[in-house]
Length: 239
Image 1 (cartoon, rainbow, N blue to C red):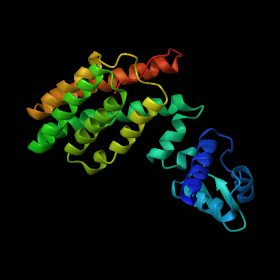
Image 2: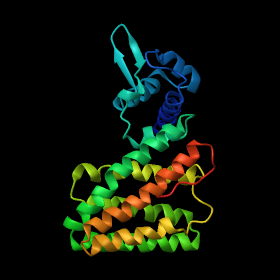
Image 3: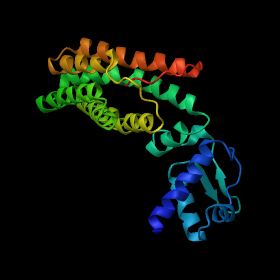
């Protein structure tokens, strides 16, 4: 096995363990334990810990060692951290936080896109909406997630707000995780999916209020379905 692949497996395994709370904040992560658990050299263990440190999951200090940081200190926007949290027992909290983040940001991004997007971005958004609907009708789950991620990436980027644009990776990680964790609805072609075309049309025609309202309806549906999931109803997420 290549070192890069082995290194990635160690990082992923440790990240999942920390997200699952197997080591709590303030506890020590010993390199010897990492070596023994994954059967790797000290160099590989150390490099894996450095990756976790770059994501702010752990900190390293002389005479103290490597300690787990509280989740509030983690880089919660890191796509890999999102993935780890979505596969942890605390998945419901991550789903709720993502829904709330999207509800706060995406309607504003849509309004800005309607005002400021260039013609190419408007056409790209419309094309992504049509691709999403076509994939939904065909039952193409891979194409559905690809088109959905493209739609939200274009929407956030077209806002002209660089900080909004960088949230696209957060949304994309959620969409990919939904597919991998079997959280997509059995029937993809539904009103919430078709509502993406309303957003694209409003942005294309420069109707800022309509774009924001249509986007708010999409994320409200997502929020309601996440709430149902939190209450124990096996209800799929909506993008």
